[in-house]
Length: 595
Image 1 (cartoon, one colour):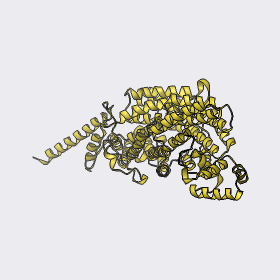
Image 2 (tube, one colour):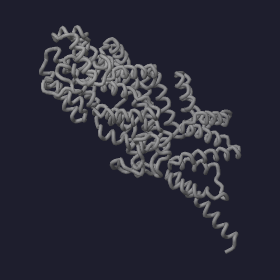
Image 3 (cartoon, one colour):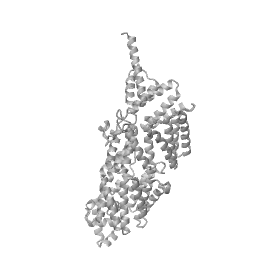
Image 4 (cartoon, rainbow, N blue to C red):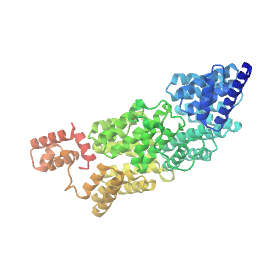
């Protein structure tokens, strides 16, 4: 066979491989496309067009080869530029901006965004400019300029409609939703989000935009405290991500927590993968991290912790904030189960990955009797967060924790201030947000109870009804504990026992061991329980009086003992509990049901 014939056959085979790769990309069979183009590109004599390099970049990203994706995109940009194709070069530049931002390289991201603007600014209207409009909206929103953000979104919508792209139109609806929610126009914002998600759940969008919109929408729902939508779309997202994943909706079946990533160590953030295993959906870990937060609220704690571990194995390196969220959620579960050391480790991992682990860490410190650290942590987190902006739920949770911590250290005035802000944030009547309303009613009722007023029962009963309607069992059980105290204060012993029994059963189902013990102790009047921290009955009595604000002289008079004896008891109490102040001892007493 002659050399020209061999070369012709090799050329034909190479062209066929590229065609098959293009076909695979059209079918969103990204691993197949990556393998074909990667093999073809290894031969220096076989060049790829700018369009084929863009396909290689996409396929490498979906296959978990993030560095190769960036390299291919850089080559695609150069090829588009050599061909004087500014639309192609502009789009490649924008994707490089997006990828570099995800990889934690803000300077490179800013440079490529500038290039994208340079390539696309003077061109007639084109679909590629939609991405710049989307970025403009995000930047304006970050500066609190809702009018400019909305103008950018409307420009994006116009470009999307002109292009006829369902992907761009759905993304523009999501962007408009985010701007409207940030501007306080909740009903309009959620309506736009529903519109975008219709296209997602109907399977009308490409894989990239489907995953993108699931992640954006789930974040929006939790920030806006729309728990019902978060549950619905989290379930839909996990069905879309479930293996075996091909880029299209999977067949029905349970989502397995195991996979090729199972060998990685989620206990060490430094060991998190730089790539997603080939064939995995790179959005899967991100969506799973959102699912963990939903499972936590629903009380499926064992599954939530297992899913948190799996999410940390699955997230790609450009989404480590999702791993941080999963670690934080696992810490919350462990803290409420009484596994305080494990919770501290989980919160530490979340912090290493860039998340401020509050208010969970403050509540952990309170459970450990470290009241000063609890107060400082939640106060600093509130100061850093500032105005609610679009993350309403984040601020609401901090305010709820601020109320709890303040009550534990007898700062009723501070607790009342936090509860009042939370009450205003939740809204009322038709404009109330159910999850926020339940949080606010709980805080308002707890403050009223601490003031020994008769007006605690109404907000607490509203709170219980709210949590039960939302199907959030832990918070409902906590409210039952407050209701039991309010019932007893009102002389309704039978009502108190009913609430304590229901709370105890719920805590036992959840595995909330410290809370279950506290409920059981209150049911039996505390006479037969083992006191925490190795305290004697007399020490517990002294500690209760300290927690009620008594001085050494007050306690000595109440117990008919000398002040010297009170001081000796306090020294023993401090030593046994590992605390160094009356405030810390008071916090311990409240956290362990001694008051």
